[in-house]
Image (cartoon, rainbow, N blue to C red; front, side):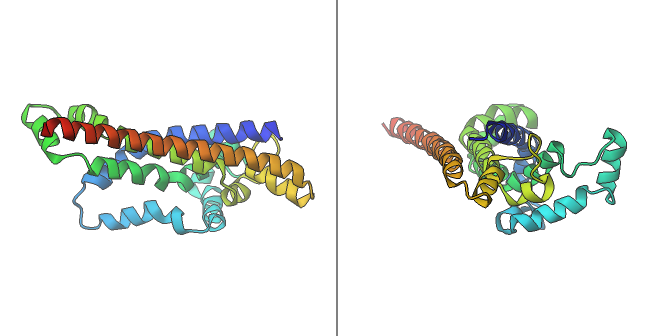
Length: 230
């Protein structure tokens, strides 16, 4: 077990989930409530990483962050080094790669909030911000948690983007998925099997938490409807 790669993977997944939890909220809110007729274009862009091969996405991110791009030149002037083949560049690529896994469950949860509660809040004099934090967020927490957990889990196992943007540098950008690839290339199947079991276990636990959260919400929703009917 490569514990250095394990620590890099956990740090990458945690940072990616945290950033997506912050920037995913306004994007999800806009997708859920905007009435712009061309909104479907934004939705398609957000969902693009779901269908785009990771190596293709990684190549475009590598070009976008490279020294010939405005972003790459700006970051190099600011930090003194480029973004490709660094941990920071890997975080940027992972945020783009896992974006739909954070935004889509959150947007669906925002969209499912009963419009009557939102309008009642406005009629009682609450601002849009107060309505968002006191009405929409409390009724969407399961979708929010699902988005955060899925983006974390998706980042744990990413390979193509890590290979293209990270470059598999030990102690910097080598993650568990890259370590499994290296072990298989070296015909060290026993070590690859151990690391794979760890990722399998993590994925199972994370999915169990997601389904458990949704089941609990459904139980309370059903129980609330039953009490209201009685």
